[in-house]
Length: 166
Image 1 (cartoon, rainbow, N blue to C red):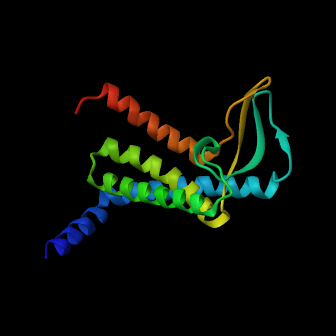
Image 2 (image 1 turned 180 degrees about the vertical axis):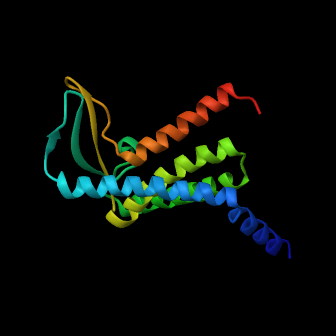
Image 3 (image 1 turned 90 degrees about the vertical axis):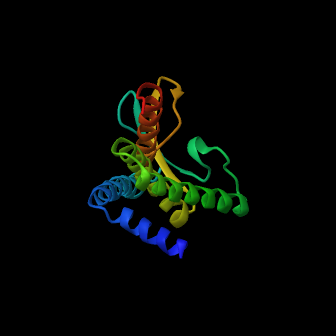
């Protein structure tokens, strides 16, 4: 009986009007990421495309996690990492539902980006990274729009943790 009560409580949290607004924001972030990746895959699939002195479009397929860490040809490791990412996203969704408004916004931004990259991992077996920031010969890690949202969310979370007391 306790399990059923927990499920009802979760359903009530999920369908609160306020939480639906955050769900819409997650979908918007996911869509912005998907549209950017589709455009780049369709138009910039071959070679590096010079935009200006600091930015190139250079499509690479990341089979690891952030910054290409844990890249491997092993399907066991790839699938294990993908499973961990899915568990983290589910945990973030749960934390979003239980949080205050500022935390909900932070988790929303992170979840929207994480879902974009997770989708690519599951559908393409790799994440298309294409934003190449550079200065002369120094190039930052190549990243995508989802990574920008994840980074913004984590940065806000860190700043909040240091400067805003509950």
